[in-house]
Length: 372
Ligand SMILES: Nc1ncnc2c1ncn2[C@@H]1O[C@H](COP(=O)(O)OP(=O)(O)O)[C@@H](O)[C@H]1O
Ligand SMILES: [Mg+2]
Image 1: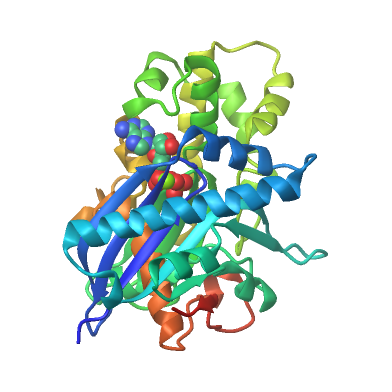
Image 2: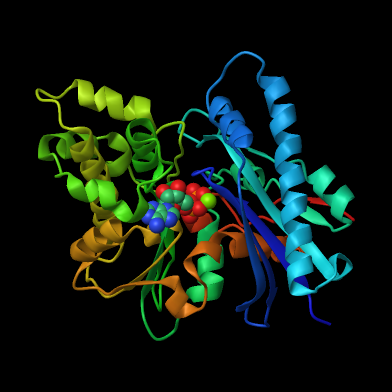
């Protein structure tokens, strides 16, 4: 009997809830039957924005966001089933990532903490489908960062015996998964992909993102600013590592701007942020693939930013830069498919983390299961 799974993802960009309905064949190749994306309404975006740092009334705010994100998740699940004609009762499980509102990676002295909202109790109750959620904290309990979790799925879906591949996910934060044809997988967060560009664009252009990088293209990279940004210790610190909007945000950018002798134009700053994303990713690609053998496959919303993709292609040459569409999954659906796969792993009592990526001591079965 076909086992269908639904994967739900809402990432650090806080732009939309992405949902896929998928089955996996015996070697884990995903067969996607339907996709659905629903823009997060302004009030949820504001709740999440507010919850990214501590403030008064946090618990009340968490309670509301936990409910609102669960309700929008149910809406997406129902729409997806309606659209594909696959009934809710035949779905084996939902893998719901939830919306991260805090991600404190484990450091030498402090155990990490990662909190996602979108109450799985409500999702299971309202849809009648077993729901797997809270994927990150078991990995943290096992000594890992709880992130990135997608490299295990990248390995399952994209690793090839014929060639070295490298997946780069351009979400709010960028993460890479190096998938050599032989040898160990390396995966970690390289730093910001879109989050700083989005925040700067919202502040100065009143747009949630810089479509195709057109605004950035009107400016010039400010070399002094790029140099100071790139000196941040995150970029040179060794993996395993993960990060989020708690670290890379406008306050981080403004601290660096204050150190400059000159004031770049807002467009030049946007161009510099784009350069920072491309440069830091390329730097890490060179670290994990020093012989420049791998083909690079991008996914996530940033792979639709033409200016960013052009700059990244320049930096990673002579390697080819393509998108994951070429190896089976359209760029917008990789992450949601990853959480469907992680739900499948959990339902099969199989591990979902990749210790070489998260730094966990061992493999663990991820998530809590809320049975139908
Ligand atoms: N046409 C485009 N031009 C530039 N950037 C884009 C475009 N489409 C999407 N994006 C970027 O992708 C982001 C969403 O990417 P996504 O993969 O959903 O990230 P996340 O997983 O963090 O939610 C948007 O916030 C925006 O920055
Ligand atoms: Mg998104």
